[in-house]
Length: 260
Image 1 (cartoon, rainbow, N blue to C red):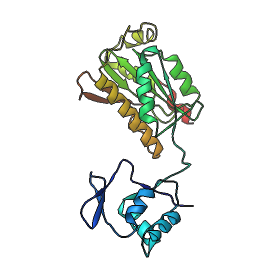
Image 2 (image 1 turned 60 degrees about the vertical axis):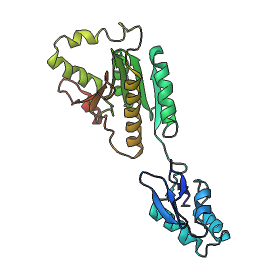
Image 3 (image 1 turned 120 degrees about the vertical axis):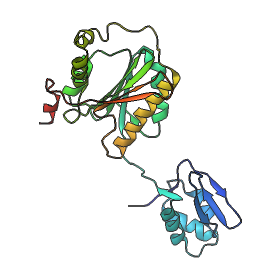
Image 4 (image 1 turned 45 degrees about the vertical axis):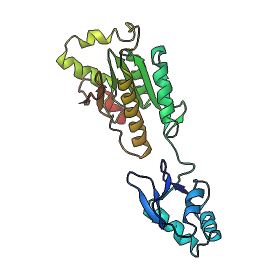
C-alpha cells in the first residue's frame, strides 16, 4: 500500500535556529534542517506518496531522499494519511429548538465523520427537553446505534450511547431513575409532549456537550468502545460543571437480549 505522508495536523513549520526546524509547539518536534527537509515538510499534503517526496528532497539537494522522509515519519514530524479510510457515519437529528446546536455539532465533526443516513450510522438525536422514548426503542429494535442528547432546564445531558445488545439503553436509564424517584415512570409518559419554550442551557454547556459527542465519534473511529456507552454526562449550569453517571443493564429491560 502506498504511504502518503502528511504534516502533523494542526502543526506549523517554524525555524528554531540556523540548523533546526520545529514542527508544532505542544510539544514541538525538532528536526535538522538538512537539504530537502523543508521542501518535504512543505509538500507533505497526504496526497503525494513517499517516493514523490523523496524525489522532491533530492531535487533540493538531499543525497538520501527516501531515508529523509522515513526519518521525518519516525520522528513524528509527518504522519501517514489514511486516504479512503472509513470514517464513522453520523446522522444528526434534532427538533426545532436544537437547530443551532446541530449546526455547531456538524461543523465540529466535519473532518471526522461522514454525515449520512442508514443502518450503519450513529444517530445523534438532540431535543429540547426529555424526548419521547418510542423512537429510541425502535432504534434499539432495529439494532441502530444511537446517542440521545437532551437540553434540560439550564443543563445538557449526553448519553447513554446505545450499541443495541451490547450497552444499556435509555429504558435502562429510566428504570434506574425510577429506583430513586418512584414517580419517574409517570413523567416518562409525558416526555415529548410537554416541551420547553426555549433553550435554557448556556453556550458553555452546549459546547461541552458537542465536545463529548466529538470524543465519542473519535473513539468509534479508533475502534474503541465510546466513553458514553453505559454512561450519561450532565453538563452545566456552571461552565466547568460535569457529572458523569453510570447506566447499567436493568433486569426489567430486555435490551441485552438483542445480542443473542
